[in-house]
Length: 174
Image (cartoon, rainbow, N blue to C red; front, side, top):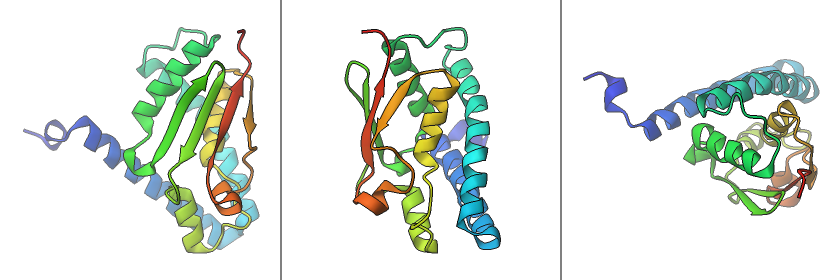
């Protein structure tokens, strides 16, 4: 039996995400050390925006929603739930919940955001522009979903507010 046959889907998802996040972190640190935080933020956010539209298409195909227009809150909920089931590993300690019509809350468990921990370790929290929540926003933009986010995420909310949580409000017909 091969290693791929022996490993569970859950363990494979964790392994692949740990590899991806390690690469992402090392890329960020390398850029930060060479170019400073402003250029690194700019490159990071640009890469996330470019990647997200491709990622949304791949996820939609994987979950059978590639030919479905995401034009209702229910369809958007299905996409987010299934996308998070595929890409959000347990070690990230994040929660996304639909609390009311056209509302989605997010929360990173206290002190558990992997980006916060890494940026704190390298001393770059002060001017870091969050790429984690930006990725979710880019997904929404790629699907032409109108939304607002409260609080707006620019820097690191864990650093500036002591917690990273908030709410998306969507503008689907009631």
